Figure 1 (tube, one colour):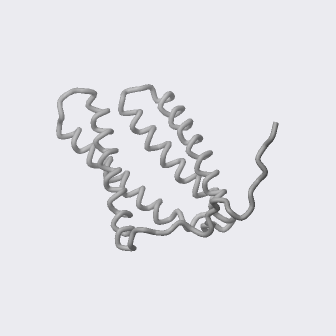
Figure 2: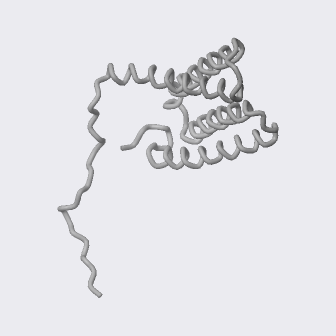
Figure 3: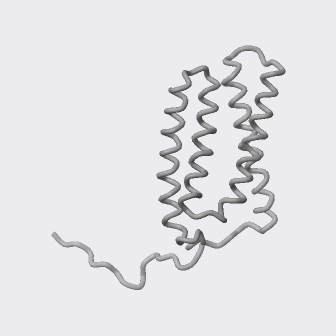
Length: 147
């Protein structure tokens, strides 16, 4: 059975980083809008889990807005500090954030504490594996992005 020989020179190889199609202003706005949007979604989700189909109350609204604020604030802090961390610490911090955020949402459903903690730990381990691989393949040992 015949196989094609590898071609030289004419392949679709990418050299250098991808072009940046957005302006610096767009990136600056997105660094604020994206965490706020995710925080609002998270807060709504936490409030919806907490009320469990019941009526919307003032405490339920407070839980939603406080959850949204804390989520968005922590997301922005991690987003700002992330590039200054080593890749291992960077992956651990984002994994802990994801696990804790998921565990809190899951705890609002009324599930047992150990089940919430175990599921949050599983989510954090999954996030760590994916993020460590990504940072390991896209950064050098000092945390500088390698394209």
